[in-house]
Length: 364
Picture 1 (cartoon, rainbow, N blue to C red):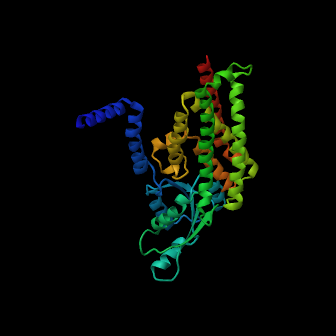
Picture 2 (tube, rainbow, N blue to C red):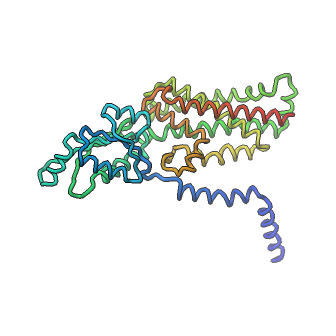
Picture 3 (cartoon, helix red, strand yellow):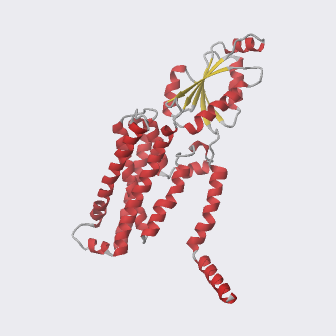
């Protein structure tokens, strides 16, 4: 009995060791998760771009700016005029703008001598991403204070999301995750199901060209995705009260492009898999981790090391989430996010071209 049990253990061990894909998943995923969560993923203040508004660049202002510039967590991008602050924040050039009082040095000197006067420093932050806005404001204050004797008075102004609602940050991110996972999953499983059941061969002997068959299968899923899109936008606007300052038309147009990209990704998955289980695992499980970790949904892209920032550029959700946040929260028109649109369009064209070529090669 004991020998039989040991034989079964050996047999199962050999079976697992011979299955290279299972061993790869079992050994590799824990390592990747540890690296991502322990090293790459960070919600701390990091790489915050800062501009300074200082009508009089006195010695006290220069000293405070030097403390800021020498801090590794902030990047000083120079002095700007107060009229440029809104433009710099909306365009994403900076995350924070610091405005010094016109009589900063005089008020500092008075405060140190015991006079009840405090220098005023205004902090203007982009709060569309609540993950970093609050902590960045607090850390900026601690850096700018310098010594304990210099007690400045801070006036903090949060742009785009003054109430710091988390829905403003997560709704665009959830949209980016839902659409790509659901659309890719539906398309890939549908086409692979036809292969498994043998009905794909029946369709291919019909007079309809193969690429028309593929597009005909994608159209119903595209229609369903559009209904889901409308539902999510209505929930976001009227239930969660997320603003759509950039215009509903532009948001809808960008989302339609993203839906086509997601369906094209599902088509690509269907060309590299043979079973529904494999298609489901790739379109749901394998793509889930990059979308959650490297798209800006949960963690700021700026906090990632350079290597992971480079890897994140191939994640479509990164560009959609970035663009949709700017349009929804910051009120930018679609023309202002043209770079994100071009990248998404190029990804869509590439995925469609590669998928149709691979699909036709398999038929031949």
